[in-house]
Amino acid sequence: MKIRIRFAKQGAVKFIGHLDMVRYFQKVMRRADVDIVYSEGFSPHQKMSFAAPLSVGITSKGEYFDIEVKSSKSSKKMIKSLNEQNVDGVEILSYKLLPDNAKNAMAVLAGADYFVYTNLFSENIIENFMKQPEILVLKKTKKSEKIVDIKPMIYTLQYDNNGIFMKVAQGSSANLKPDLVIQALSQFADVSLPEFIQYERLDMYCIENGRFISLDDIGGCIE
Image (cartoon, rainbow, N blue to C red; front, side, top):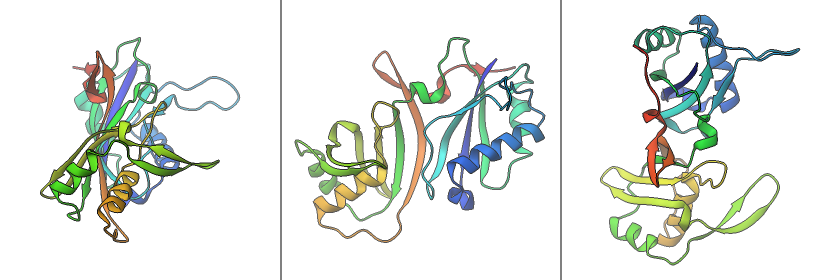
């Protein structure tokens, strides 16, 4: 049985890195007595696959990982059991049974929503920023640096009274971090960024029939 779990990451745990979160949930699975499937071989490990890693310092209401289980109680009971083992700041939000042919979350991931808590930019500045024919930035990786046009990877960028909402490309084919968008926006507006800006990931999506579908809308609850 393939299961997709959605969880929130808030408060101080936003400073816990991705690999430590993986190890954390491996322990939670054992403590909650989840009937999880282990790989075969010399060093068996839990069959667990996360969607896009969350950068340190970013909170989230829409993180996902997939597991395989031999058996399962109802979604309601599993959410309760898992949350009883969680620390403050980590909360299981949903527990869905996936179709047998479903691909894992990372394989289908195409986009993500973020909210940026800043009032540095007006609605007019954001609109003019998006009217540019291209938005060139220096994108750095571990191996290289190159100039990239990120405009095709920004699906939505909207002003909000409390900050900025954005939907951007995420996944293996195209991946855009929200702080890169804000850096480009600050250069366009000639505004200096403060040392710290709070980002929050709201949800993650795949694409079906040309439409963004929340990873949480795939599969269904176990009764």
